[in-house]
Each structure stands twice: as structure tokens, then as C-alpha cells.
Length: 432
Image (cartoon, rainbow, N blue to C red):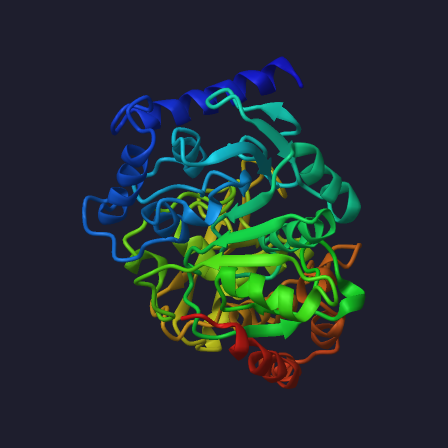
């Protein structure tokens, strides 16, 4: 590991330790005292108000970690694994003598969140706790099972905030870890957190298995409308075949399927560097499709996935998109200069999405409409040469339909039968 990486990790560890001192000291928070402190945080909000939703971890701690009794525990988590008082769950459990926490497993972006998209932190010892941190990113099957075995854990706990989109990789980290835990003979516990864009409906095309990658391992729709415990139950029941994992889930209390994240009272921690706000998550299940084009999806701006554009795009795109009168959203002609990623340092033209009624906004249909109007209004439009769009949508159908001149309604209509079939299967795994 480089010195710069070590320095960065040390800083992250120091930040975690500083957060721990905001309440009772770590030395004081052992045994029942730490459990009481963790449980008490369920009554506070990061904004000073009341927290209505108690996460899976909040409930686990309030029950005295009974589900982990007598187990050597490892946690798959990232910076979003926090209590409602924004202490990291690893720091809380490490300070509690009732939990035998012996390992941490970091996904994409890392446990403490020091890596950008497509990166991880590697194997190191966490400066704040001294715990060994193992890298799970892009590992699956027997190699990941071997990591679980080498760590010495009996139970693997998963606690990561999802954003509700099939191509957001943390749900496939969940899937890969479940399969690996089954291979290694480990018990698996999933702690629930809210789907930040509600759990009301599944939307978009369902992945076809020939297009399976780390942005979609199994046939679920583009916006799944489920929580991580519901997905874990679905994975175990539908996709792990004859080798399901020994699974236990800890549900939330106080969460309703109609809740957007700001209605939970919980603090928002960016799950990845380009997911800064719940508003980003609201549009992401749709506008992430622009990763599969030659347009910027807004990375390198303060509004990733809300700003879209390219050199040569002008007001005609916003005009064409607004003419469709899509429910819940308007489009502003916008110009921006990304600081990294596509068009770094160049001023580009495009649109900014302004969602004015999130109750009726459909991110997937909106993104399809934007792809159609971008292609029609800008002669420079092109798909990425590697057909990444097919991996994101889960088949060739969206790309080939748009290339053939199909309009938004025709493109969206083509996946309704497969979506209805998934919704029927999904019902058996919903918990709220």
C-alpha cells in the first residue's frame, strides 16, 4: 500500500475515532453501556429532530446483539453503516464486549470510503480499531469464500445503504457474499436500511441472464423497489438454487413503503462519491444509463446524474424533452464543466433535471425519453463502443429500439410483460 493511501486511511480512522468521542467515551461504552448508547441513538436525528425509522442495526443493538451471541463476527460495510447518531457500526460494535467482532470486509470504494468508482482499499488494518479489513470488490465464488474462511468468522453481517437501482453494485456485493458464505459454511445476517426512493414499485426492464455482470448478476428490474433484506430473501429463494445460505435478516421499524429518505429522519451518508444526496438517488435509476453513451452523466459536477450533456449540445435538447410533458419533471438548458470523467475541464451543454413531483416521477421512463430526444436533437449522439448500455439495461432491446426510431412509449411498453412477471415473484419477499 502506498504512503499516500496509508495516510488517507489513517485520516479516515482518526475521523471515525473523533466521531466516537462525540458521545460517551469508547472506554465507557462497553457491555450494557455501549448497547444502551447505540439504542438511544435511534431516538435522535442528524438534523436535531426525531428519528421515526430504526434501522436493522438499531434494532440489533437494542436487543443486546442476541443474534450474534457466541459468534465470531465479520461485517461487510462502508461509510453508510452508521447509527442515527452517525457513529459507524464497526466502531460501536468494536467497543462493545458483547460482540466478538474480528474482521471487516470492504466493497467498492472501500470500508472507510477512500476509493473512487471502480476502486477499493485493498487489505489493511483499520487504524481506528486495529481490525483486519479484507477487500471483497470484484471477488466472488470460491476466492471470496476463502477470504471468509481465512478471516476466522462464524457469521458475516451485511450493513450497507442501497439506492434502489439494479446497477448499483452494493446489492451484488450482497449477492456475492451470500453465495460465498454458503460455500464457506458461514451464517449470514443482513441488517435492513430504507430504499431511499421508496419501495412502492418495481420499474424498468428486467435483466436477461446473457447480460449478467457486476452491475446486474440476476434478472431483476432496473429499479427493484425493495430493501436489502427483501433482496437477500429474494436472492436466497430464487437465485441461490440448491445451496442457499443460512440467512437471518433484521428488519427496520417505522419504515413505510411510501417513504422517501427525507421522511425517515435518518442521516444521509453518501454511499459512493457520486451519490451525494437522496435527490441523486431519485434520478439515478434512470440517468445512470447515460454512462452507456458519449454524453456526460454529470460526474465531476456537484449534481451528478442530474446534469447531462456534451460538447455541441444546445437548447434544442431541453426543448424536445420538455415538449413530452413527462410527469413530475422539467428540464433546464444547462452548461457545466466537469472536473473529472467525461469532458474534464471542458464546458458542455445539456440539461438539468428538476423533479417537482417525486410522487409521479418515473426515473426509468424519463431516462428513456432523454435518450430518445438526445439522439433526435443532437447529431453527435453515440453509444459507448463497448455497448455498456446493454449491460445497464440488461439486454439489447433499449439500444436497438431507439436506434430503430422508437419513441419513449414504445420502448417502455416492450418490457411490461417481463416486469409484471417479476412483480408477481417479488410479492412473496416483501416485508413491509
